[in-house]
Length: 445
Ligand SMILES: Cc1ncc(COP(=O)(O)O)c(C=O)c1O
Image (cartoon, rainbow, N blue to C red; front, top):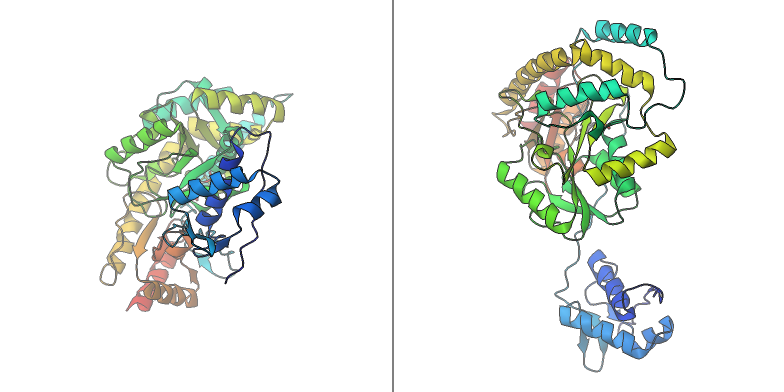
C-alpha cells in the first residue's frame, strides 16, 4: 500500500483562525496546487497530531471538514486519500519572454512608430528644460505641479477622465505605477488577464503575490479573495478587443463585492483608428479603479514616464510613502514631457501615428486574410492572428529565417491554451513589414 505523504504543515497558535482551519487550509492549498495529487495517501490524524503537537481533535476536525468539502476521502481499513474528484488549479506557466536576438528585427507589441518630427520636438523640449530652474531640493512627491495641471486637462479631453491635478501622481511608467499600487495594497492575490501583459505579471509575482488568472475572453464576474484585478479594457493585450460596456459593469461590480481595486492599464487607447477612443474605465467609477497611463507609446518607451489616478485611500498611501522614499520620476524628464504636451507634439504624434497604424493594420490583414483569420485590430500597433500551434510555429520559423522575430501568442499565456502569432507593426519600417509579411505568408501557405 502507498506510504502516507509527509506533510510540511505549520500551525500558529497566536493566529486568529482556529488550528483545525489552519491545518485544513494548508491541505486544501496543497491539493489545489497539485503538490498533493489525486490518490495521494495522507498521514493518519493521530500521526499528524503528533507531528504538529496539537490534540487529535484538531486534526480530526480538519479532516472532517476537508472530507465534507470533497477534497479527501477515508477508505475503510486503508487510510485517507486525496479524492478522485478534487480539482487542482491549472498549473501556471510563467510567460516566456525570449531575449531579443541580435540580427533579428523584432516585430513586438510594445515598440511604437516614431514620428519623423520627433527629433526636432525633442530638441525644443530639452532647450526648454535647460532654461528652467531645477528644484534645489526633493520636488513635490506627487510629481511636477504644472505637469499635473496639464495632464488633468489632457485626460479630461482625450480619455473622458475628470480629475483634479491633486488626484494625479506622476510615475515612471505603467510598471513603475503598478509597483507603487502593489506596495500600497493589503496582502492578497491579484487577478490578471490570461493572456495578458507579461511585464505586469512579472511585477505582481515579484511583489510576492499569487496571480489569479482571468480568462481574457470572458467577462469578469467574481473576484472573491483578491485585492486587485489588472486589466487592459481599452484594447485587451494581446488579443485586441475593447471591453464592452456590460463587461465593464460586471468587472466593477465583482470588484466592489470583493473589496478589490481594478487597475486599468490604458497603454494605447489614443491610437484608435476609426472613432474616438472609448472613455477610460476609471471614468465609470473613480472610487474603484486605479488608472495607469504612459508616455511609452506616444513619445518613446525609453522616456520612463507615466501617471496614476487612484482612489483616494490608495492615492494617500502612495503619496505618503513617496514623501519618505522620493520614489518619483526624475524632474528633467517630467519637465521635458510638460514641454512636449504644451508644444502640441503629443497631440500631433497621436494623429499621425494613428494614421500610420491604421494603414499598416490594413496591410497586415489584407496579406494574411487568404491564409488565416487575423483579429481585426481597431487600435494600436499589433495584430493578433489565431492559428493552430503547428501553423504558428511554421510561420514563426519562416519569419525567423528571413530575419524577423514574430512573437508566438502562446508565450503570452499562463494557463490559457491559445496559439497563433502576434504581429507588431509599430517599430519596423514599411519595407521590413512587407518582407516580414511575405515570410509569414510563406510559412502559412
Ligand atoms: C499592455 C502594456 N501596458 C503598458 C505598456 C507600457 O509600460 P511602461 O509604461 O512601463 O513602459 C506596454 C508596453 O509595451 C504594454 O504592452
